[in-house]
Amino acid sequence: MKKFVFTMMLMVAPLCMVSAQSGLISTKKLYTKKADMSEYLVPGVVPVVDGKVVFTKEIAAEGQSKDELFRVLSSFASLRFEANAQRGDWREPNFFRNIDFAQVKEADKQAGRIVAQGAEEMIFSNKALAKDYTHAFYRFTAEASQGKIRVTVDNIAYVYVGSQETERIPAEDWITDKEAINKKGKLSRISGKFRVKTVDLFNEIVDEITELANKK
Image (cartoon, rainbow, N blue to C red):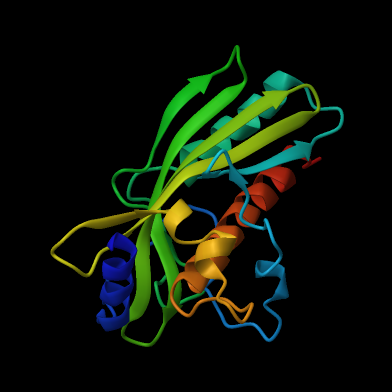
């Protein structure tokens, strides 16, 4: 029932207008209907562990010490998860905006671990005067050790911001193979774009950390 209500809210939702400011944060790609969406249809591209959506990636950083990689993660997280941080014009593909729940929650140098609360606008499309988006929440965990970093993104949920009723739906009910791929083997019209954007989000985070960790 909750999923049905959320779907109906998205189908009838008006596109929302927002103002833009400048800031420092990583780039964000808009959801676009690619000619080939096969990468998002691969079974398990949204991994489920013990019934929960959990994205995990180990990043190699040859020759880098645990302390060096922890500094990389600290620098990355301080910008990436700064509350209300914003970059660019919302009409441009690289627009990014955190909301006020974003924060670094743990920075344990001895353990080499960073834990942060992700809370941001997830943008699906935009036009000259409006954009289609939701709020996305997730937990980011990164653990540094000698020559490598392990990145995990889990506890993912979405909140549609166009309704007076705050409706929060977990990724497990929305973007898994079962929920986002229809009987014809194609992405569902509504939840499919959440699946695409969430996979892209995790890949972007991994790519940014990989680049920073291996910068000479």
